[in-house]
Image (cartoon, rainbow, N blue to C red; front, side):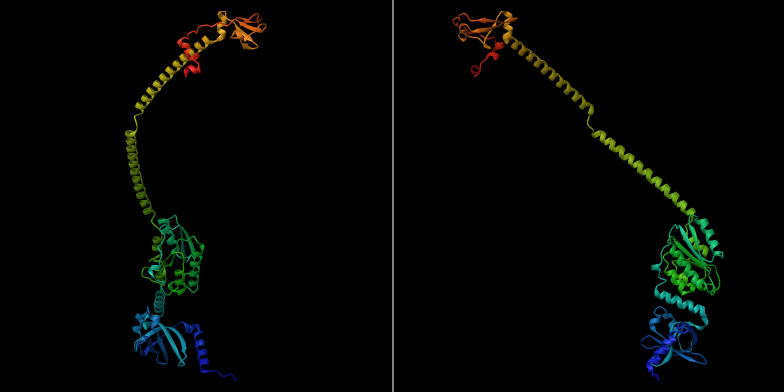
Length: 422
């Protein structure tokens, strides 16, 4: 026989209660009694009706953001509370752990709306700091709505009128009924997976709170929060607010208004472009005028500072003429000097004396200039004006002294001996 401890049974009962999907997320209506608020800040009370009673607790940490609902738990007040049912093992009591409270007359859907709204706000899904700006000129716009409704046609008409350059991609999905939540989440995921979507419009036409309820679902809210593309929520009419409106980057009062929000007006863009073009043209013209003025001033300054080339050219011509004259003079003097030298050389040419009747006597290839240089019988070679003939020394004569002849001044440099120059 298996024997269990009290703790084992209590733990088993707690796990059994918490594994029940109905008890894990439940709304319970009743009258609050035995309300107490110790210094811990928690609220302990009993939720009862005419037949039964259920112990309940609302922990202070659970309503950090939702603490404005704590005053609703007062003695004798009829309330609708949301939470989970579990077992408090220390005392073995079944206890209702409350996380949200609404007055009983508010209605179940409105109570669930307020609860989820408060929960998501506490998690930061509504923070303005995380909301992204919309692209100014989107190329591709995704639409999450029903393919059979008029919403998509209204959006297309507005976009065709305002910004026909954009491509519209429809991700069709039911927007009410049991398949709506999964369809909306899947459509958002599909558009994000494309990678070319610039902005998403998620919405539907007006309806009752039950018909709009898929856009109040937590899964849809988290899908919008997790979208990598900015999302514009356009659900119902201007007075209708859903959880999707709070989570989305931008809330539009209607689907047609959403189309106007995501796309610029082409007429406005054309007008701005015309103004920009005019401004650019004016700026460029002014810059060109300033540049021309600057260039003209620079040319003028260069011309003023430039040297007088004509005067320089004239000076160069004068120098060239003087140089040519000097060269010509030097050339003439050189010619004269060369002519003088030629004349002197001709005057000293020993062969030139032959024309005047003189002869050159050679012995063994050497000129005989003295009587003592030959003896009787020596063979000689005598060169005269028109040729050479041989001769033999009969008897050499005596040497004779001749007075020195003065050399003309013009020939003096040629006949000056080294020792005389010294």
